[in-house]
Image (tube, rainbow, N blue to C red; front, side):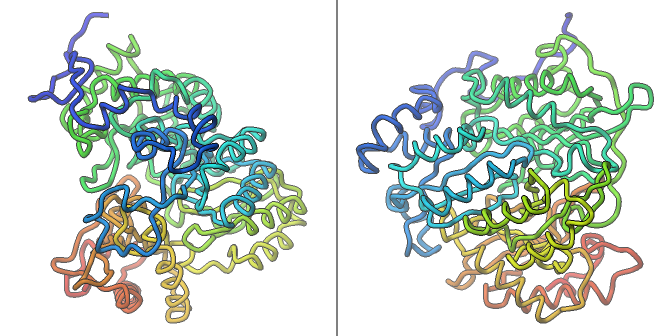
Length: 552
């Protein structure tokens, strides 16, 4: 195919492979070039698990082991003020966080039971549902990792490429294939991408992590605006249901929302197009500086038109059809909490763990309840929630009662329990400055006590550092961990939103609150919003027009 556009080269050497820039420009690139991260598994199984933590060299411990879902966790007793002053080895504990990837958020009850048993027996009962539909365990010993892998893989689960500079877990609609209003089911594409490409050395050395979302839900339930590549369900007026293609979204310290390429992709072509986008990232992505190595920077420099041209001409060898923009999602919550009808006459039941924290015993009890309700599968959501599918009408009430006895609220979930998320925080994360999980849970309890009748949708996202694992810039109230006068505190971001009118939250000039002030602050702002909102005005709309004095 004749080229009509040439991909522009960066003004300086950014380590772009497509231009022959193979100089190793930082320590991470040197480590990845020396040995593929996928190869570390053999050393874990044959050496490190037998000889213990002290036998692990630093280049595997703090880099390559991530390719198999393993991060060292934070050593207890190190306060947030010391996070940036200590060397990595001083922060390391001799235990690991282990991330189980759940592509599409899908788990059979057998799989969930195995995760619950592993948690109880080998991870001190810990388990967190993440906002990327994974489950994370803590307190994992290197000696137990091979046995954990054996148990997971026996039921079709893996930790492969759950972390690292690789294609991470693929987000999918939690109600794919069952929702009555679904545009198209993206599950076959998720399965095809996982089968063809996860663990493929062709994509195991990317400039940085690569995040994917595929959903045919009209409710836009996979935060497509902040993924590297997203396929969003849409109906083409001539070609029928398919997907609208978005690229270049990510948050962290330099947040950028994804851009539409204006291309319509049929279901069967999604894996091929995905391969093209990740190929561009591998070949043209910036590798010089880690903080500029995400796809969003390349998209920002190229623009949507150039990116689409390169994708079509160099990677696909054909033009994609132009397509329509997805319509705005319906008003209301998109967390799937509550009891909802499926297309087959049965129901799905969404429950809200507090800030995503569950436990091994809770998970196995959840499995027991779902089995009694006649279900055989659950889904995790990007809001740190869990959904039980395929419940017969006459089993719904019993299931709801059982879930709520476990602390998994369904019909009784308050706005605050439904809308509050938290990252791992100071408890286990080596990058964190403040505690998040415990503070988030305490905040929910306190707001339920103070504002028992508050019913308006409100998202409150707590993050322990600037990296935005909990998506603070796109929350109604985003709270970024900082030190305030030497104490744990938060910088406030207000009015972030996703959807057709997606925007990043605004910061209130000079506003930092201590952790102790947090309940008072959220109560004050939530009360003002409830009093001043107009008609069906959302919090993000109100925060955009409110005076700064009203937001302080």
